[in-house]
Length: 63
Image (cartoon, rainbow, N blue to C red):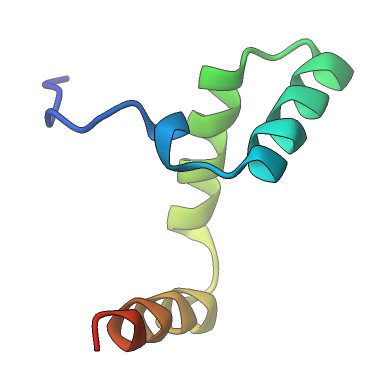
């Protein structure tokens, strides 16, 4: 699969979000990169109402 040239996602995460990922890694033994992959796949299959809220939040932040 071709890379889209995005920066490493962790650079956009807060300290709390990274702490959550680290704690999940410690609890499950799953690498953070795999946890991020799983999160993306889970979000893709999440209900449309949640996706709509994310889109509305993004649009509101764009002004």
